Image (cartoon, rainbow over all chains, first blue to last red; front, side, top):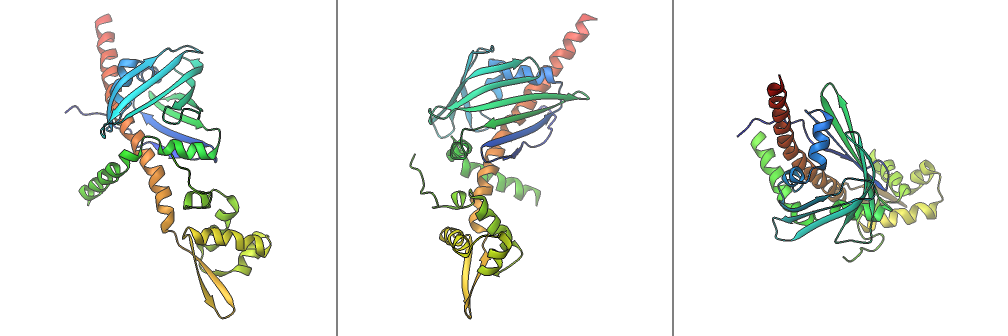
Length: 162
Length: 118
């Protein structure tokens, strides 16, 4: 197995009652993080994490263009998100709406920012929700199936460290 | 998806900032209602109402000591809130770990392109 530079865990915070902030540093320049973030065949490889397979990644990367990602989760159910690009500054920032298709009337706005320092890139994703209720729903979205599995996984990791 | 009643679980109970202040006031230990009234600068009926909600979801326990009702914090119902954010964080970590693999390949490709240009 290839040795992969792992830059650590994602950090999730809830800055206000209606926001989610996700931060992660990558050992790569920002134009490559941006490329991996916006190129369909690359998105297919990372977006599902360990929780399933990406079956669709459509990206029309222009203001007013739409995106749609679909995965089949390990539990067999589909998880789909789509949205529309509102702002695009190549290699710097992508602002788009984000709709979890199981709750189609709730539209969040995600601001993805790529900041490079000494060849390393910090990605911040600020998800702004219309209300606290929808934000709380978002964190749960599609995750019910992964909850126990993730807890089991965490437990195994903890045990392996002991 | 069915919506939980406004105060049916810890998530909703701590959504109200005053109730978070009540919990903060109890972090240091057990207190009578009057202490909380003074600390928060609210009326006793307001504090009692918040305590009632917190009791209903199990975030505070109460016992009688003489003529006073003593309240104390019970953190256990907060665990689902922690787990909930934790799981979301884990799912993003999994994604980013995969993104690391993609990025290493992109760096390698760029490096090779650079070499062939020379």
